[in-house]
Length: 359
Image (cartoon, rainbow, N blue to C red; front, side, top):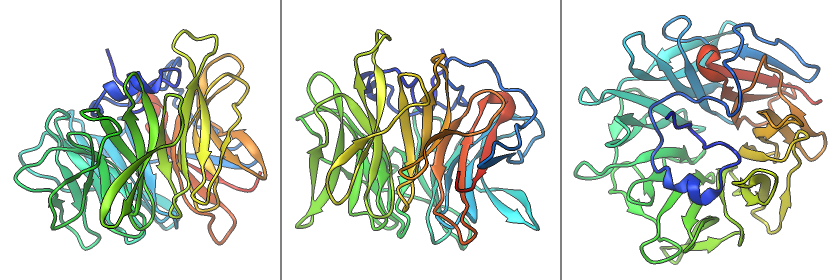
C-alpha cells in the first residue's frame, strides 16, 4: 500500500504519527484519480505552472519556497528510479531545475526545506536509514549529526541553519553539532517535529499523549527544551512562520469513521483560530507565511480534497488545478503584491507552483 507524504486528511493524528518516517513513494492526493496532463492556467486570483522535471513526464514534488520566492526546493524522479533532490529558480522568466549532490552511499535523496540564506535542507534515502543533509548556498553538501545518526528532515528555520524532523523522536540538527532529541510529552512516547520559526527558538509538531497524539510546541528555557501541549484533541502542527505562528489540525468527530481534520492557527502572541473548509468536512493546513496566509489541503462538498489558499482578508479559496493537488508552502508577499504557493499533484502532474494575487 502506498503511503503519502502527509497521511489522508481524515486520518486521526495518533494514526498519523505511527506512520513514522515518510515513504520514498510519491504523493497521491486522497480520493482522487491521476491528474490530467494539462494545467488549469488561471482562476481569477491565481495562475498555475508546472515546474520542470529532470526527466520529461516523470513525477516530482515541491516542498518548500524561500520567503522571497526566489528558490523552490523538492525532488524529481530520475529515469532510473532514483529520487534526486532539486531546486527551482527563475531564469529569464522561466523556472530552471538544478540537481543537488548527495552521498554516493545513498540510493536517493530529497530536499525538504530552504532558508532565506539560500541553504537547502533534506535527507538521503532509503527511508529506513536516512541522514540529515544540508546543502549550503556556497555549494556541496554536509551530512549532519554525529557517528552516522539517523533522521529525516521536515523543516528548517528561515533565518538560520537549524533543521528539525524525526530521529528517535522529534529531533534538531545544526552544522557542527550532534543531533539533539527533543523531550517527549509522556515518558517513552513518540514525537515528531515538522515546523520551526525563524531563529530556531520555537519548534512544533506532534507527540504521543498516552492514547493518541496531540499538537505540541517546544521552546528553549534557560538553555533546555520544554514541551507544551497546544490542544487536548488529537492533531499535529505542520508549519510555522518566522515569528512562530503555527498551523496544523485537530481531529473531530464527523461522518467519517476515522474523524475529520479541522485546520488551526496557533498564534505566537497567544490565542488560536479554526479555519474553514472548501465546503467539505476537513481542512489540513501545511504552510503559513509572515502575513499569516495559510495553504494546504481542504475538502470540497463532494468530500474530495484539493489545494487551498486562506487569508483573514479574503477567506479560503481553492487553488486552480485540473484535478486535485496538495499545497505545501507559501512565500511571503512579494514587492508586486503576489506570493508563490508550491506543491504537487499526483504522479502524472508533479511539482507545481501557483502565483497568487490578492483575490
